[in-house]
Every structure is written in C-alpha cells, then in structure tokens.
Image (cartoon, rainbow over all chains, first blue to last red; front, side, top):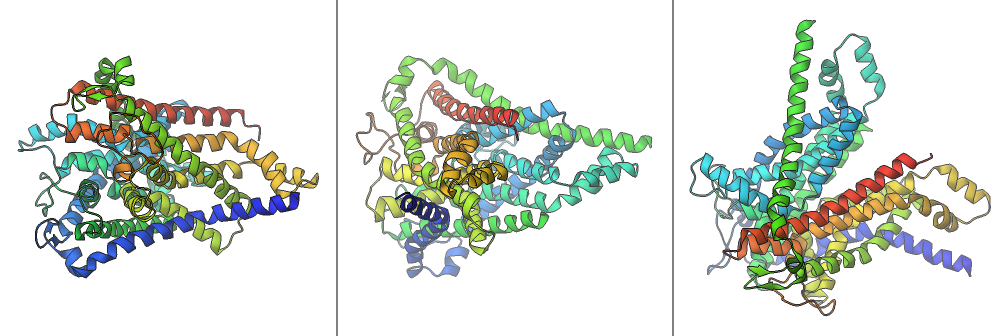
Amino acid sequence: MRKFKEFIIEKLILICGLASIFFVILIFLFLTKEGLAVFKSVTPANFILGKSWYPISEPAQLGILPLILGSLMVTLGAAIISIPIGVACAVYIAEIAPLKIKEILKAGIELLAAIPSVVLGFIGMVTLVPWVKSTFHLPTGLTALSGSIILAFMAMPTIVSVAEDALYSVPKSYKEGAFALGATHWQTIYRVLLPAASSGIVAAVMLGIGRVIGETMAVMMITGNAAVIPQSILVPVRTLTATIAAEMGEAVVGSEHYFALFAIGIVLFIMSFIINVTADLFLHKRR
Amino acid sequence: MRNTQRSQKIAFFFLFLATLLIVLPVGLIVVIIAQKGMPAINWQFLSDIPRQGMRAGGIFPAIVGTFYLVFGALFFALPMGLLAAVYLSEYAKENLLNRIIKLAIINLSGVPSVVYGLFGLALFVVFLKFGASILSGSLTLGIMILPIIITTSREALESVPQSFREVSLSLGASKWQTIRHIVLPNAIPGILTGTILGLGRAAGETAPILFTVAAFYLPRLPKSIFDQAMALPYHLYVISTQVPNVDEKVRYGTALVLLFLVLVMNLVAIIIRYNFRKKKKW
C-alpha cells in the first residue's frame, strides 16, 4: 500500500516537473490557433511591414510596423539609460559598497523590482509627464521619452541583480592576482573583473531589455498611444504590448481585429523566446 | 601613481552616483505616494464601495477582488510549483529533458504579462468557456507566477545538504519519506520566500487580468469564482486614465494601498530569507 502511494506521488511529481514544458507549448498553441487566422486577410509581409494600423476601419488595415518601431524606440531609449547606470550600480554593490550598505542597497533594488508597473505608470503620469512637457515645450508630455525613462527603471533591477551575480562569481584569485601585480582597485575592476564577467553582464542586459519589451501597463499609461511611425523620441508612440492591452477589450471575439491582436502576441512571444534563450546561453558560457 | 589614484576616485564617484540614481527615485516614489495618499486613507475608503462613478467612496471591492485572485493563483501554483521543484532538485538527471525543462521555465518567466492575458483569454475565457471570471484570472496569474515559485523552491531544496538525505536513506527511509520528512521541512523558509514573492507579483500585475477577470466597475462583492471582480491594479489604471476628474487624493490613496500591499509582502519575504541565512547551521 505504501509502495503504491509512493508510486502515485512520484508520478505526480514527474507530471508537475513536465508542466512548464506543457504550459509553454500550450501558450504557443493557443496564440497560433487564434493569431494565424489573421493571415487569411493579410499576408505576413504586409502584416509586419504594413505602415498603417487602422484595425476598425473598413477595410481594416493591419500593418504593425508603427507598433514595432514604437516598441523599438521606447526600448532603445530605456536601454541607453538603464545599461550604463545598471552596470555601474552592479559594480558598486559587488565591489565597493561596505557589507551593511550592500544589504540595504540590494533590498532597495528588490523593492524597485517589486513596485507594480501600474504604480510606476501612475507616478510617471503625475510627475514625469508634466516635466517632459514643460522641459521640451511640447504639446503633450506623453512621449516615447517618458516611456523610456520609466521603463529604464523597470529594466534596472534585472540588470543590477544579474550583473552583480556575474561579478560576484568571478574567482577571487583573479582579483588577488591583479592586486599582487600592483593594480589599483579600479584598474582591477575595469581590466580584470568586467571582462571576466562580460558574458554574464551581456545576459543581464538582454534580460533587462526583455523585461522592457514585454512591459505593458506603464507604457500604455505614459507613451500617448499614437499608432503612427514615430519621427522623434519626443512624440507619442504606441508599443506592441500597449496595443494588445488597449484594444483587446473592444475587439469582438473571432473578428479580424481579435486575430490580429493575437498575431501581435505571437510576435512578442517569439521575441521573448529568442531573448531568453540567448541570455541563457550567455549565462551558461560563463560556467 | 597619483594619477591612477585620482582616476580611481573619479570612477568610484561615478559608480556611487549611478547607484544613487537608482536608489533615490525608489525612495522618492514611495515617499511621494505615501505622503499624498495618506490623507485619503480612512476606514470608509477601505471598507466602502466606489461611489459617484468611482470619484468618491472606497475601494473595498477592489481589495477583496485582489485577495481572491492572489489566493486563487496560489492555490493553483503552489502545489504544482513545489512538486515541479521537487522533481528538478531530487529526481531529474543531467540530461536533455532536464535541460528542456529549465529552458521552458526560463521562457515562462520571460513571457510578457500581456501575452499571459491573451493566453488566458483564449484558453480559459473562450475555449473552456469559464468567461471573464475569478477562475480564469486566477489560473492565468497562477501560470504566470509558476516559474517564480519553481525557481525559488528549487534553490531552497538544493541548498539542503546532501548528507541529510544520505543519513535518512541509510536509516531505511524511502526516497519520498526522505523528501517529505527531511528535505521539505529544511527548505520551508526558502519556499515561503518564493511563495510570497509570487503573491506580490500576482497582486500587482494588471495586464494578465485585463481580459480574463477585471471588471471596470462592480459595486458589490463577487458571489462565486465564476463572477467577475474588481482588482486594485486595474482599478488604479481605470481611475487614472479612463475616468476624468477623479480627485487626486483617491488616485494616490489607491496607489498607496496597492504599493503597501506589495511592498509589505516583499519585505516579509526579504526578512524571512535574511533570518534564515543567519540561522542556517550548514
């Protein structure tokens, strides 16, 4: 009887172990099941490269290039802000900060990661957006720049914690070797530790960017939601994620619009898949 | 020599500056929300339904809805995540299958939250015909937090020393008995930390619940798991972007309640982990 019970439990454990694979496949299946139907009315090339997104006009125009460019612009802006600051902060925490301060800083970074995106979006709306509007004398502060700044704060915790891990796992002997040769602490960091941890830092950056591309609520609240091809960073844009979140509520189940939004979901899923697999390869290279 | 010392000083100053650039805004955000949100918080705000088109009254249904969703997600994700972690730490061998499982977990944790929303809509709401309901929302959130629970629980299980298992097995205990009575109890603080972090994430996410459960305005409590519900993050989104002329105080108050809920969960998790690391005897 006990044997039988253990047999059941061990099978259950195996099934749960396999559940993650099952869910990834299930997500992909349901996205494609609903999303591929859009290609009955628009070719894949016209969908990706089409310059106008008017999903409810007659006939509907389903080109997501403006949305892709919107996502890219916001992501690029966030990357430019968050990568230097994030890596610098990781170096400070891993190498320079005294032990006590280190613990506090790490907790602070964790708290930043925990702030819900809708709260960051709200704070962005009431503080950052008016600031951007008045600083650059714009008709509206809801711009790609505002989105980039807020998103940078969402990428930083990921970048800091993964990069800090990478720096921490560089063997002590590297550092001691550099010190023994008379290098200063900064020279050691710059010439020895950073290169040794480089693949982990690359992974950190990729994971941070992955978080930014997938971010939805804050972006929707502060980038202004204009589905046109952006000409500068100071105009409203609309990202892939925000489009889904903003329009799915109105789309009729089974309509062209509904299928198109799922197709955008497929694009996002594939992007995050590529980013995460590559980042994982970089992380494993290190070991 | 003097030159290198000086460049080190300059470099370290900039590193410190970068750290401040991250940490100060975090503090500032919390302080601003706390300061402007506090005046809104009173018993009525926490216990009343929204009134006058959500411009007055309280946020009670949203708080209750968030609790239902979070515990619904946990009910689903904790057993499954924990067993998956047991599999990975105790049973899995270093082979292709194990590698694929790990890759799947990494991917699951990287899938954008709005894509979870789409998935929940397609599978639970439309295909399984649960409709927009607490059940659909909880399941969607549950799958979303699964990777967090698996990863943290696995780390906790793997940090239990191998010798503990060996002693138990050598005393004649079976593999499952060893896991049940030796490995799991020693890993509880780590598992708890992961669970609370997952809860915090589920409480704060908006995109996955947009089309699976969230009600724009529902001035009563949900009656069953097949009912729609309001939720705090979605309510904050609604009153800050969809409803015009909402008193600033109400917005800040809602943001404060949500932030407080999420930060307290995370602080508890950090404290449990900190104490556990300090007490750890191995």
